[in-house]
Length: 139
Length: 136
Image: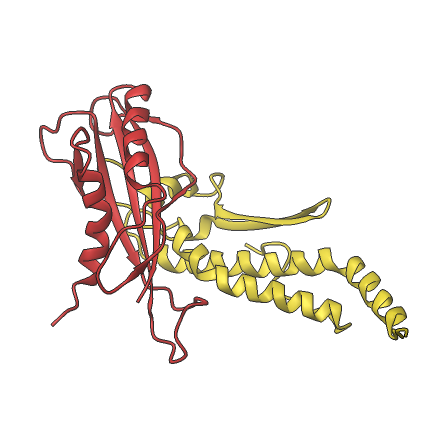
């Protein structure tokens, strides 16, 4: 009684290639997620009479460090009215909040999860990795 | 004719807070002459149009409620004391809302107590946000 296994060389090649491409692919997925959150946040904060420049202050960036691809999105305090972001998102004892970042994050979560699953499938099956969002925020 | 679910979800968190008789809860606004410490609660309700639990027909059957709690006291310690009571009442509690299947209330990252002088006198305001996800 014995067993015969075939295709292991091809699997090893696919896994090696996946290992080489996964971080760039993951960073692309993160970037697309950040871009989606940025757009949703800008939309929710557009038209605020007392913070007309706040939407333009919303930016994102991505990075790879070791085996981690990450991103950060939100109002840049160095930009005009960016410092108002916390006040607008969470409110104060005088002002009701106008949440945008948290709802945008909620909306993005299922899309992000699916995109990562698709990335994994593409890599393991040797398909070309799709290019998603711009890695750098164009402003 | 409305199903009353929005009010029911919002009230679920407010009722949990009100159950602590040592906690002063203000819903949406602080009345004139309010005595500190207190928690000021802003409630938001979202119906995501993109979620793994949306039905096959794409109907919006996911509810995401947030209670943004401003825990206010005369000192940072007093504000933290309010936040602790709020946390005790909300965190990991599974509210019962007729017509909805509720998850556990989770806490989102909070900010430390900060000095706020917008009222004309200094208070400390610690913002803690709690989130509930429910499906219909």
